[in-house]
Length: 219
Ligand SMILES: [Zn+2]
Image 1: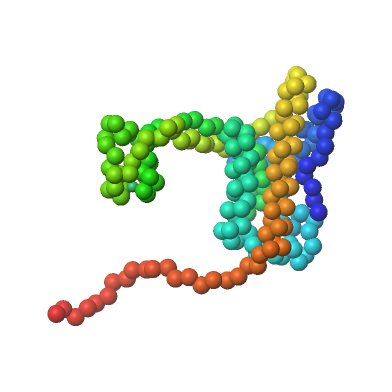
Image 2: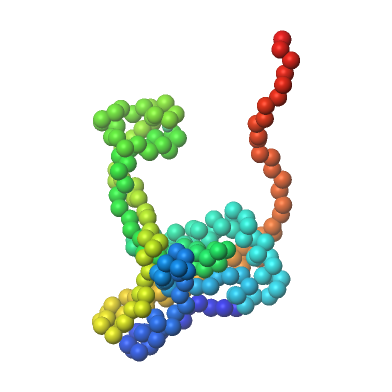
C-alpha cells in the first residue's frame, strides 16, 4: 500500500530541499493557469491496493457518507492550520489532494436564531429577538462572531521556488507543513479502508417530488 508520509532529516538543508523540490505537485485550478502546489495522487487505482478493495472503494466514492468522512478530515487539517493552509480535492474526477492557501476572518454576523439557526447581521439590541425566518423569539447575539473561511484557489505554493535563500527555520516549517499534509493523505486512505472493512454499499431507491400541469373538469 502506498504511503505518502516520509521522514526528512530536519538538520539537513540538502535533505529538506530535496524533499520539497521532489514532492509531487498538481495545479491548484486548471493546468493552464500555471499555479501549482504540493499534492498527493489519491486516485483509488494508484494506491497499491488489491483489486477487490479497489473495486469496493470505487463503489463507495459515490456515497455521501464516504465523501463526508473525507471532508471532515480535510476540514480538520484546515482548522489545525488556522485556515492559512487548507486541503482540497482537484482534478477532473477529484483524484488529487492539493494544498491551498486560505484565510479566515470574523464574519459580519452579529446574532443567530437558537430555534432555526438563521444568522443575522444585526444585534438583538438593535432589532429585537424575533427571528426573520421562523418568527420565534429565539435570536441571541454571538459571544464571538463566527469565522468566515475562504481559500485562494489561484495561488500556487513554492512554484519554481529557489530554497537557497530560505533560513533553516523557514525550511523546517515548510517541510513540517508538507509532511502533515502527506499524513492527511495517509489518514484519508486509512479511513477509506476502515469504511471498506466495516460498511457495504447498498442501493436505495428514492422518489423526487415533481410538478406537472393536469387538466381537471371544471365543477
Ligand atoms: Zn428562527
